[in-house]
Amino acid sequence: MFEVLRNSWALLLGVMLFMLGNGMQGTLLGIRGGIEGFSTLQMSVVMSAYFAGFLFGSRMTPELIRRVGHVRVFAALGSLISAVLVMYAVAPDWIAWTLMRVVIGFSFSGVYITAESWLNNASTNENRGQALSAYMIVQMIGIIAAQGLMAFGDPSGFILFVIPSVLVSLAFTPILLSAGQAPAFESTKPLSFRRLYEASPLGCVGMFLVGGIFAALWGMASVFGTQAGMTVPQISLFIAAIYLGGLVLQYPIGWASDRMDRRKLIVAMTLVAAAVMIVPVLVDVPFSVLLVVAMVAGGVSNPLYSLLVAYTNDFLDNSDMAAASAGLLFINGLGAIGGPLLTGWIMAQMGPSGFFLYIAALMLLLAAYAGYRMTRRPALASDQTGAFAALSPTASSLAVEAALGAAQEGGPQNPDPGGEAEAAAEIAAESGAPEPDLTSDPGFDPERPTGEPERG
Image (tube, rainbow, N blue to C red; front, top):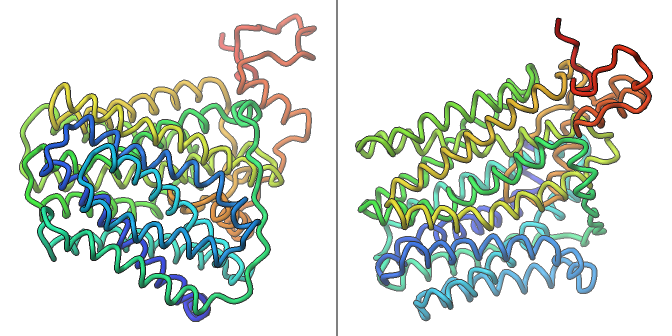
């Protein structure tokens, strides 16, 4: 780890400053929007726009890097972020904010891709896993620490918009002055949705739902706090608790996932989270209880992303994992766009408690679907699954690919459980279709899922 910090401290410091700026603007907009009198539905559109821009940026940035290079893309997008952060206060209009959120989402996506490319290039096969772990931890700590900076100004003024703009501008210095030769950049074409769904319907459906959950927590938490009448320090603590939960529970859940049927863990996690989310919907609870609820929400939703990636890769060849991660990121992004919109609509109908009701509903949907998939495909033995890799939902496909590669090198490999014939049987079982070569068996029951023993 010392070697990682020595080689990458400047990049990690720059990423920390970027996350301080990003964490502040996400919280600040929800509070300032309430001060400006924007409706919950209007704020949901504003918050959703970030994820639309982020998804668009993940598709466009690789081409920009190939055309003009890492340094120019990084500097240009960082400058856009810094400018937009100040423009929020200059143009307090929800339509203008929506357009600016698209721009800032696009820009942050590109910044992440560029930074992760540099980090990947600066790491070796031996320490890449440690480097990416440090990167993910720095991201989470940056967002958590950003909430403390909300105490340094009045949300109705300008200073809280200036601080993140300055932090983002300062982030350029350590990164650009220390960046060596630009690494060769190759983007991975996503696996087709059909192929991805055939490999793991749970991975696809789960990623879409988790995208909606994460975006609601990231985008609408401050809107919820404003609508619920929280003070600015309370909103900051509430959001910090969400990310603290994700940071604390990521590794224990990863440890458990490598030792049991991942679907059982998904069902257990989502049922517990749904039960906890329902509590503030049914009864009024003190702020201290809301902090616990926030920690559970973050502690479940963030590891769920990594868990679903690991589960999907259990049914793929190593050569397909990079393409699959790109496809899963796209599906997650689609869910993220709709998350704040649906949350805002529910909150507009029933008040702030709709925030928790939405999260509980999606958790229950994921639990139900994971339980259903357990009846359609037998569990793999633990020695036939790949290793869990801690991932952030904001990570690019480049970082996901590198993290998965490091995890596979340091953990159990993902061998073919039974050769090509059994792999084909797994695909047929997952899609619900019978295996063609079994129809001649007189005891074959087309209604029974392939791979499931006949029940007497």
